[in-house]
Image 1 (cartoon, rainbow, N blue to C red):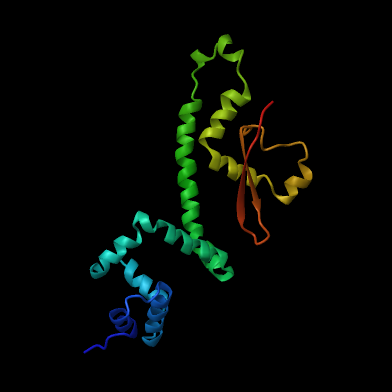
Image 2 (spheres, rainbow, N blue to C red):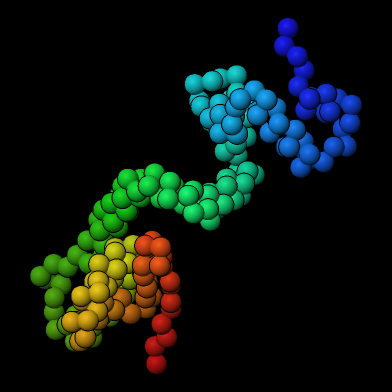
Length: 195
């Protein structure tokens, strides 16, 4: 017959034990059983274990969203964790960017669609790059604009292309993407004012 763990004994006899101490006792139980916290998480997350379904559902409940976000933030703040997480994220990130750009380009195509019979002098007189293209592109494809912007910001282009600007189309909202010291991509969103 399995023996009751130290953590269970404490819970039965002293319900006032702090959350921190309860967690320490659980970690001690894991260590005694030669298990890691990750073994426990894998057991809970695994959908093929129906006996843990209650824990599985609670883990992804909206009320626990901030806890999952905190875990991911803490992993990203850890040097080794960041490397592992970014490596795991790469194929998923590429697919998400691909899907986002593909979907937005479909929407953009219909927004910019013009037929020859609509191109009249009345249409052309007030026409401007900003109003007829820039504002529409800016509102519909911020992700694509960000990719184009960072692709144009290589060291070579910064040194040689002094007269070219990536903001010719995107004037309302400028997404500044830059490469951080540790080689990762970051984004600064700056709203530009117009006189």
